[in-house]
Length: 230
Image (cartoon, rainbow, N blue to C red; front, side, top):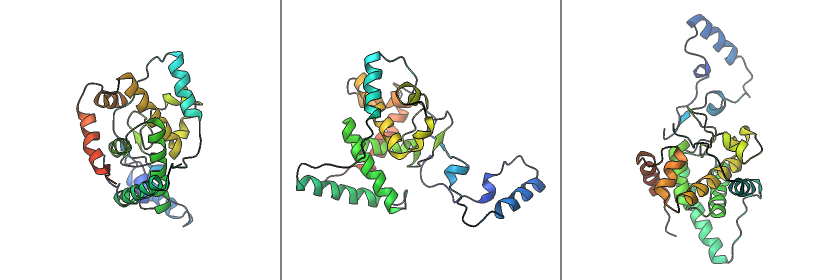
């Protein structure tokens, strides 16, 4: 599912199965709430996302330990540069990506924080940033609170079982920006290692459709939107 969701109307949060009089009564209650109450679409009615999922597989103790360690290091995503040239290149990338992402993420501060975090986490995991941006576009259309039909959560549609396997067991944290991007990048890196660097197969494994072309092809097509030649 791509692009922006339609603006949320208060009555869209009501079950369509309610009889009309009951819907009207419930709607009157909703409209009587203070004007300061926000109606974020993701809070009231999470939009469905890509239907695939990562599959829970047995992990060797060494792999589990390595993945847990990679997740646990929660350093803030503050870029560090070896030179002024590198810093300027990053700022040019940030500006270009911010312009491209504006249509999908209007708030400036949120957009910059998101891009900075993606940049940081992809480099931390040794991933191509444009590939991960393409994956996020396909998985959630850049919606922080996206939930798939099988329960995958957030920007990178991480399955909740991962928080039990390599995290602290709290799936609610997958709606936190950096946590979700950290899990998604660490998991994709794990699949790339398992597939000996084969991006096509690793993407299929990420989606739970290993060996099938539909999902990797969609990510590769979306990746073209985020390529950057600085």
